[in-house]
Length: 195
Image 1 (spheres, rainbow, N blue to C red):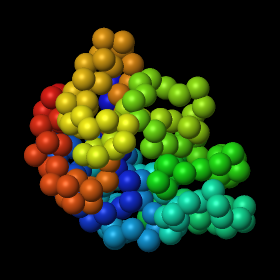
Image 2: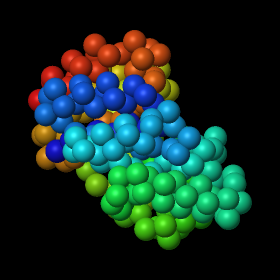
Image 3: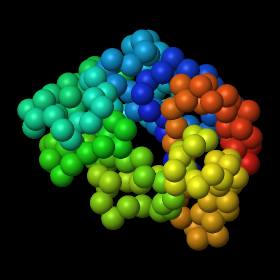
Image 4: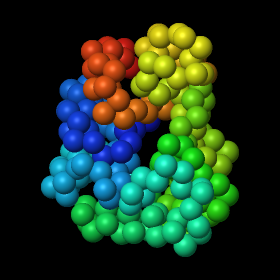
């Protein structure tokens, strides 16, 4: 049981999607309205069996610090835009930079989302609160939580743990970070390992 997602709507998501498909995997792509992906590319991701999720209009640095009306606009307008592009409802949302408040959560629910993802790591299985779905591993070489350990090694260890405990494994990243830190080979190595 694997849940793979990528945030921010980078043009590199197209390459990421192709890599996932190479290993018969599909992901969720959380896309802000101001991301780099064109409507045709978003439609293409959807047509290939990937899930499209909301990620606000402008990807604010800290959405929880915005007023309630502006938060609502960020969340609802993005949802409307993406649904018009793919022609169907979207039900998954990701908080930009993992930052949110109880108000943010309530607005995500009000907009019709069924779940929302955070950026907290080292979690397996389903969160009790579907609007605080945590993750297992972030594809990133320097998270404080990793205490200097190699992200790929941790990713494999947690995958093994998820199989032993029969719990869902959540992998997330940003295609632009995979490029920035030159992690494509390691990412593909993990995909092979997961399969």
